[in-house]
Image 1 (tube, helix red, strand yellow):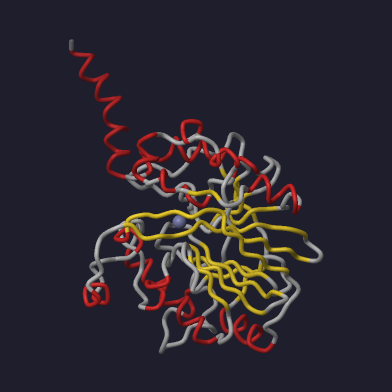
Image 2 (image 1 turned 135 degrees about the horizontal axis):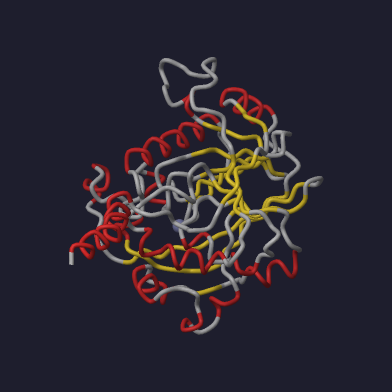
Length: 327
Ligand SMILES: [Zn+2]
């Protein structure tokens, strides 16, 4: 049959192409959103240095205890890790989300915590058995469900996702569909081979008709006055002053995923840095070693981690909140 070959080719070529280029983390549509004001690093740092306290009530919530493979959380091939002789095994970690409460703009969350369904029998979870076992999800112990927390604190106006890995969106189903989820550049569309296995679960966990809004960051290097010859990272950091009043900055930190974001909060208690999964563990932060196999782009992740480490050097007193462990 001369046509069957051609027909098979029509089916096979897109499948092979998607194997080579990978598929997106979700099939859900997003819309670009112009929110916040572009900020430059030098101006942000000097303003934060002079006035570290601000209007935001900041809370960190431990949503679950968990344990996953250490070599996923830490790059074992990094010279520091080799020197320390780290051993494979399960590393105890936690899942966090953050409440950002602005006196005028209201309540926002960073990441989503754990939906009430994850406090039920795992057979009911909207997660494929492949993903469940690959992510070691039988080790998840929910402490607070997002549903319970929101019942006591009210519904948020928006949710910022540090990135779209499953462990950061597990609370989505407890959050109203009208609430926008803000994501970083290319976060929902960037192709990766792994996504072929997680896309269906990511869609299910997010829930249908989720309102994904991709933040527009200033173009890298658009502000040459900030670039310094001794520190090429400086001009490249892309920062948004989300509320436009210097109280909450989103920073694009590509590497762990394409659209990973970190956040600086000028809180009533002082400066807070939400690192996200650019660094998962306390050991990784102290030794400046990026995550291992859980990271998409080692080099990009290392650059972003260096940039955050140098930011911390410039802002003593800033409290650091890592992806999955507390310092
Ligand atoms: Zn994570």
